[in-house]
Amino acid sequence: MEIEKPVYLVEATTYEKDALERDWRGRIASWQNLAVGRWWQIGTIAKLPICVSISFARLNGKLVGFYQTISRAVDHTKVERWLNTHVCHRREDALNFQNCLSELGIDVKGGPSCHPPK
Image (cartoon, rainbow, N blue to C red; front, top):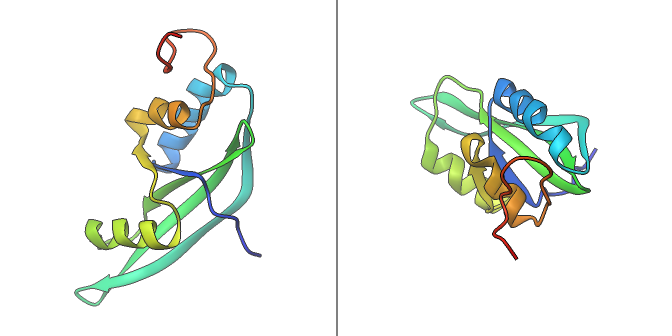
């Protein structure tokens, strides 16, 4: 099964993704988790595999990937290069998730908005 490319990536562990969903689900129009997720071995370092996992959600209809490294060995430069080449170059970490929403033009309800005043 082929997966379409996400329009944005968020670096987040499974726990962080769940926490983001709890915090933001009621503040945006739609958050739909997709049952599909994948992992890839993107290279090796010192004969150990470098693996990246990506799970997906549609936020207001826009496909967003949540990625994390899941291997003992990690080379962040290789991970960045692989993500840029094969997935998406627009990325943010979990702490700055509001930047993802802002860049995608997703309106936020309640609390401080991540959009500048009009």
